[in-house]
Image (cartoon, helix red, strand yellow):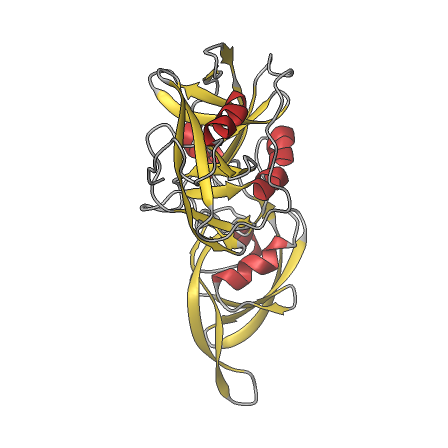
Length: 314
């Protein structure tokens, strides 16, 4: 985030008080060899940070704002939303901050981020929302994220996983640099609230899995009434042993419908799969060699994060 005077960036006294109010809910994370970033108390005994911050650290050390150390354990990871949940015994008495439920952020709104540097203590950064948009899909598996909140600059060191709040001190979400090379983004509180139960209960977010990589394509097909062009999703790779492989999908197939609904490219395929469940059957319509075909197969569950980190398979 771009820096503005910490004394009074909004013209209204009390910003330092807002930082002090939320600071007890912000913790520093230390790995075996270096600082990892920050984490926020989301519910008693549970911290939320970014998957990028904890990476492969399963038991990071956790440092409170007053310097008190705790032992944490990663309970779940979701690289698609860049979120991670940590269980930390001994934090049951710490009160989570207030969340901005129902708030409608606007481009240009003042926001501030609070991080915890395990050497220097509480840190704060002040700026504005550079852009506000609707729901979007991450490039990491196409996970849906409720709102696009872009900060007006990048993140300072140690601000990965920092708490981001509005001018009233209400938490908007967590700071992440995973989805942009130039700007920090805010992972919205609504997305965290939706993903967190699965992380705590299952260690990951189960999502239906075809085991293919796709790209936009337009294919010519003879439907019996003449040759026409159809938009679809071209299968460019099929994971060996995956659901698509077992169900008969081939590289070069163009998926044009799924579950009876048109598939006009990768986003369309994501939308069709979003309402499906792992283990369920889905009927696909595809074009192979210029001929329409139907194929029914059983969806799998996306492998756990350790096996899919960096994957973009559907």
